[in-house]
Length: 181
Ligand code: SF4
Ligand code: SF4
Image (cartoon, rainbow, N blue to C red; front, side, top):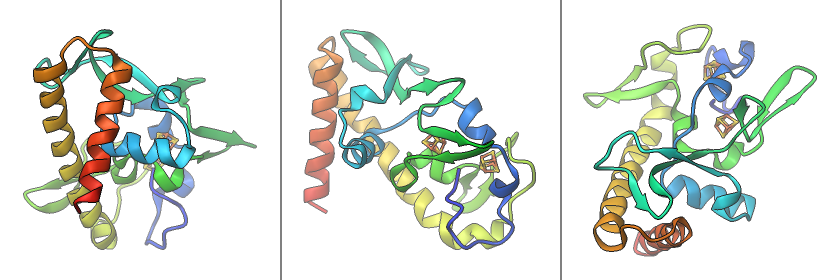
């Protein structure tokens, strides 16, 4: 799911049919939704799907149920995956979710590592991608922590109110956090 424009050694995506964009449900956090909403100039409701929460304590408690936020699917893949002549591309590459940017990497004990059971056709060169991926993974970790705090705050103060109110609350919290940075 990384950008093919980035100059990196041995880039497995070139020989792949973007299986990751077809197989996975892409869960998103507040900053992901903020970037997508601004980049697309669209309301979050146009690209978000509600999924039953995986973790009771971290699910969003809204009128619609106990939910997590994910990207909508279309024709058996991510809504933003486009195919032309058997070539697939991400149409939101500049502001795609953090999980898309980081796949198939993760941080383990502060070091770059490759996830187990990846869909990629070959292994990735960890040394070659370390400089690019570590700052991103650290930022992504902070954004998910921010999101967890935000959801807990919502659940404690606004449980049972509508999803649209939650989305406004969420985007407002991101705006506030960006102003103080
Ligand atoms: S946002 Fe882009 S990279 Fe992420 S799953 Fe969708 S098409 Fe793939
Ligand atoms: S499955 Fe792996 S190699 Fe294929 S597009 Fe996704 S990240 Fe790239």
